[in-house]
Length: 170
Image (cartoon, rainbow, N blue to C red; front, side, top):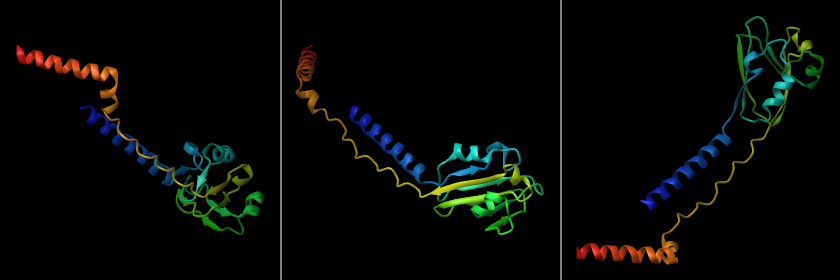
């Protein structure tokens, strides 16, 4: 029974370590602005600080009202000047936009509807995904041998043998 419990515990530990490993290498999905979305009046610098680090492979989801905002990827100059005249990418259709961070670099996004001047812009750094945590060496299941060679173990073996002999006589 003890052997079954220790092997079950070992398998559970191995499964938990695998789950941590898998979660450490999977991409994250971030709703820009959280429940407030991509809208005026949100401090995206604070949002970025709360959600960093961002890694290559992560997704940014911009949610906004159709016709009220857009998402423009710009360079650093366009970001600093709220200038969308030379966009890297312009997404102005629909009411949400999902963008995957596919390179290790700094990304810049603005809204070209005039809200950029009120802070509706986002700058973030996508970092390389850290290497996965190494799985620890398996822990050997404890054996019964140390118990049997200890004074208490010897006493228990002798006691059980004596009780068994007495029960046979009766």
